[in-house]
Length: 141
Length: 112
Image (tube, rainbow over all chains, first blue to last red; front, top):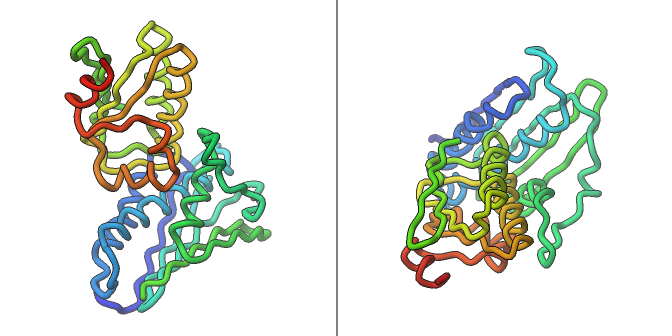
């Protein structure tokens, strides 16, 4: 993939059956970032995971009531940074209040945001009137 | 979710015939494992050879199975993890919780 700006903009219904599609897009992008000097296979898995977790999160915070309920995902690939935005229409949550998992007493839930925070360079969640947005950045240097 | 249950040297082996475990199918996996345990099979080896991707909900489903098996005096172990799947267990330190074997032979030999 060339280093020119590429933007992928996807809108899916709030249903988990579309997670594979979204994750696969991330995986392909990671694998084809020719100018990324790090481990592209690892990056491909991480982008699959981060997009899957972020989309799951958005779906969980929405209630699917009909085809009008959707999650929008924008992936912007720039020369030296990857920027992902996931929009949801739910109640929203405080990302700073999400605790780090207790590794000595592992729980079934609560690892998704931890993965995003650990594997990416910055994560913010902003509540807005129209929609909430989870914004994830990963340096490609 | 495509799962196969087998008996191997007296062990219950659960083969996961999926490349991907995420929030779409992890609920099925958890329910299947818990049903196995409730039906009197608390010693299970989950074979993950086919699985190339697992997310937090997949790890959670296996952890739920592990806890349920332990509560019934059994054990849930894992085998044949792909390197990137194993790295997810390392990232969450769950490799210290589960017994993880290279293959089913190793799993059944160690467990007997």
